[in-house]
Image 1 (cartoon, rainbow, N blue to C red):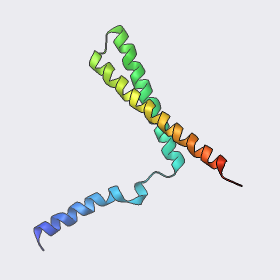
Image 2: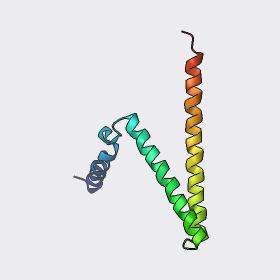
Image 3: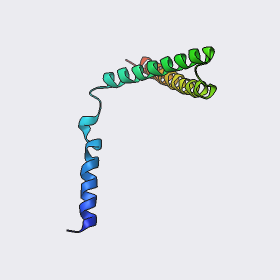
Image 4: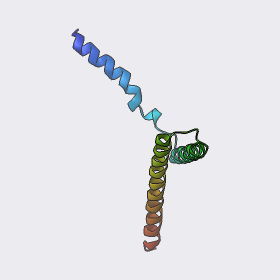
Length: 96
């Protein structure tokens, strides 16, 4: 057996669990719940960084980084909300 082929087979076997369908979230509701919890955690971390910056325990770089992460999370949430509203409006326009 060629060593390169053995190495490739070993690498494939190691990467296979990452592509296994069983690793996918149980349901869309579970994925939405996870996304909501991640969003709340991002907001919480940013709030803690802002409070720390006010009392002087957090450096400005950390504060700016936390605010940028929060801005990205809020923009993502607004985009998702807009897409959901747009889809709902399209459903309402469908003839019965």
